[in-house]
Structures are given as structure tokens and as C-alpha cells.
Image 1 (cartoon, rainbow, N blue to C red):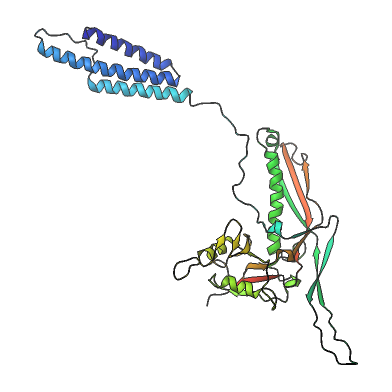
Image 2 (cartoon, rainbow, N blue to C red):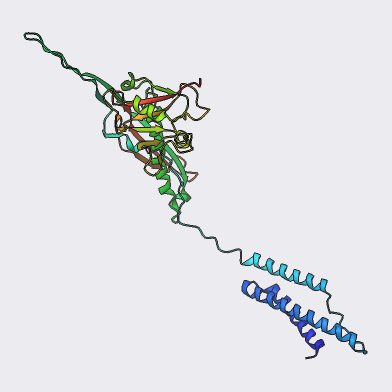
Length: 376
């Protein structure tokens, strides 16, 4: 084929492709055009070289079409062609219809300590006040000679009073959220209310002050059942800390079983990080079954951490004991009310929830409390 003729055909096709690219939006077609352009440009370069060689061999000069591009011009045109293609794609194919998932991603970690579910829950629906008696000690028999009185062995009793505490939660959402059928916002709001109530109960079990409208928490000085206990004071988590806690709890006759450590996550980290002089772990921490050397633990963020420098000396940090020694009477079910009246003009839907409950330590010396000791 005549080189000059073929070159003109290539130029014509390139011009045609440029006009097609400007009007095309289909990505597949644009990619095909781009491939064809590259092929044609390569063929044109080959033709140019052949024509240049021929011009040197033949004596007769060849009139070269002024439209023939040099290498720099070809590269510039190729770049412009690709840029035009990218612009077209971004203006049409990228702007796809918006798709909304119908699943609401939950918070990926626990929001409430499991302590709330492990203490002793008592159903007292409709009650106002709950009194619980406990045995402080048993008597000891004696030896008696003939004709003398029997030895007295009355047990010693104590009791605690658990009064009603009102715990409340309030939430507002827009009516648009409630009416969106694809995502269950309303269901999540109701779940959030229950979670928020349990969060407060979790805090009160440990930190309730024992005053009006509060629980009497394990760390409260108002806990009557713990009045005769002496807190264990430690300045740091060491390789003897766990044994010190276990042996300090309970009576003189045996090492008590079934007790649980309640501690901050940072103190659990401190137990897990202890090493022997040979570099072996001091304790075996089972994160699945939640035990330290077989001793169950419960993490609660309302515990201060012995391992934290920010924890002041004298602060309660860890508790150890049977969780059945703490009772939470439920005086009413959780009541959730919904109203559209308060902010009717704004289209706001209001939810309020309340539960009447309370809590106190009901086992004599039922918990060993561990305080942070000032460093020597």
C-alpha cells in the first residue's frame, strides 16, 4: 500500500476518534478508542520512519504533508486524548445512584460491664423499701459441768436497708428518623435507652454513695455489711498481689472459693504483664473465660487502676468477693414513654424511660476492698 495514502487514512481515523470521544460516555468504548488511537499512532510513526528513509534514498524529493506531526506533537495529542477520556468518565460514570445500607453498624465493643448481670437481682415489683438480714457470726458451744447452765450460742445478726432509687433516661429524635424504613433508628434509640440505664446501675453498684436516691456501692463507706472489714492497701501490682488478695478475703478456717475480682482494664494489663526473672509470665490470663490463674475477673471502668499514676493514694481500686453478696432489687419494670407534644412544631419525638431500683452489699464482709497505697 502507498505509505502516503495509508498515513492520510490514519490521520482521518484519528480525527474521527477525537470527535467520537468528545460525545461518548461509555467507559468500555472509551477504552477501545484509546487502544485504537495508540495502535494508529504507532503505525503512523512507523510510516514516518519509512518515508524518511525513502526520501534519503530517492533523488526525487517527496512532498510531505504539512499535517504530519513530529514526536513531541504526537505525545502531546495522546496526552490530551487521555485527559479528555478521564474527564468524560468522571462526569458521567462516577456519579452513580446513591445506595444506602439498611443495616446500622453497632458499637463494636462492650458498652456495659458484665457486673450488672452477675450480681444478685431480686424482683420486688411494686415495693418501696427492701430490708435484708445477714449473719455476722455464729456462737461457739462450751463444756458444762453437772448442774451448771448450758453455754449460750446465739448468732449475731445485722441488716441493711435498700431504698428505692429512680434512674431515668431521656432521648429526642426527629420524625424523619423514625419514619425511615430502611434503617432501624427507632429500635436503636430504644436499645440505647436500656444500655444507658444499665450503665448507671453499673456505676452505682461500685460508686453509689449510700445517700438519698443512690445505691450503697461496694466502695461506699456507708456499706454496713463491710463496716468491720479492713481494706487491703497496695502501691503496685506485683507477683504477690493476687495471692495477697485471695488470702486476705474470708475467714480464718479456709480459703474462700467462688469469689470474683472486680478491676480496671489497666490493672488486668498489669497482671498480664508481670514476668519472672527468666522472662516467663507470672500469671496465666484467659481472656475468653475471663480468669487469672483460674480466678474469675470482671472489668469495670468505674474501678480506679492501681497501675495508673493518676490514681491517688487512698482511692478504692479493686474489689474481691462473691457477687451474690451484692443485691439489686427491682421495684418496677423499665417504663418507656413516647411523646410528640413537647416539640410538636419542630417535628421532634421524645422518649423518656425510668426504672426504680436500688442496691447494697448484703453479705457480712462480703467483699475485700483494695486501696492504692502511697509509694514508699
